[in-house]
Length: 330
Length: 258
Image (cartoon, rainbow over all chains, first blue to last red):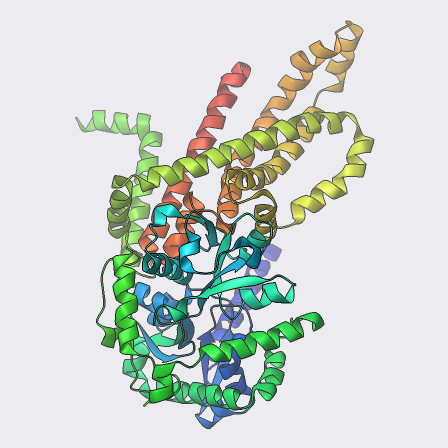
């Protein structure tokens, strides 16, 4: 009996200390520790933030950033609720979240060009959107990829019933190679490069050539913008500085990325360097060239939202000034 | 009057406890939900409204049937493989010792990690989900089967042998009946796991089913719809469990008294 009580006592103590430690940990002096939910695995695509961490751009702004890879899109509600400080998320995800009254705000754009791309093997003869008629297309059947394919089909005047959309999750490449689908929806800076590095000849239809939709960027919660604008300002500044530096020093940027993406095998290095450079090509569009890097065109937001509403992906629209806050980037 | 009410309660309180428990649960849920925004924890009323909406357009039924079909097919497949194998292994301990490490090894691989591969190999249709579901259901049915068949009383076996019973008679009159209670335990476990397997398969890639619904609702930040899918999954699991329990009851008339 005594042992039993002692055992429970020790367990409670351990849990208590653990809990107290996690709660107490961030309350130290020095730079303010914040968390960014990356919503993906460690990847060279996050180069601006890796550069900012490595070269002290965050420290200059008085912040210390923890990259958190545990959450996927579930990070958005947490950001809205103030449980997580920032996240990297797609513009369409922000629009969808807002349509469900989840108060998140987009602060700066990483992908100024909308990155989804429709990819087919060269031998399939699919070269332009019209060629997709009657074909099987594999994609994760929600989110950005779904928006992209709906927009492309619609623009090409193809009814959705004229193609077969197959949910292949994130196994697009095997699905395409094994011939289970004729084309896939991926990202211009990812699947095409991966396929080419495996020796496949491909055709790709880049969505950004057809629409000015909004891609991934830095987001936070409305609460944070209201209660802690200085912190938001610091994060946005460091992000933009990181982007600029990365664009000017691609080689060094890649070397920095390698420290933050430790799981890369040697034979992936060539491919990942290509992923980085083609990602960088998506960071700028005409609008951001004119108004400065990280800026996002409110018209693109209007258009994205209009299309998403039209395709039934959201059931109500949100005023653009609630979705997008460019105050911190000016 | 009060007396009669009291007598009624005393007689039927077991049947009242279940709905009462549900009521308390929903009440607590509503209470706790009040402290959180709806996108973190939607209250029961909100989930109820979403459930009605989603049922009205017929989509829920479609997803329910898909997952139900995958689970049943997986369960039947897993069971048809596991039960004969369990009998064989229970009678050949040497083979069992040789095979066990492999069977346990396969079982130890988290199905979540295996499912995307199976989906790539067997396609994005129903067959890959049935396979995942069958794989998950297989193991508990197998282990319970082995345990059940081993539990045959050796004295009774001897007795039947002395009386000149044929192999078939020994199996149907002694081995199978004495193994049934344990086998049924394995089946109950297997059917609920089969549902989980089907959902895991759907997570890996599919356009239909309750697992897909969870994923799609998650992708569109529709938290109440996630709850709707979870409730449907729970009902599916309970329904299957009752089905097996009823089957057990029907199969073993000699145990009904207990």
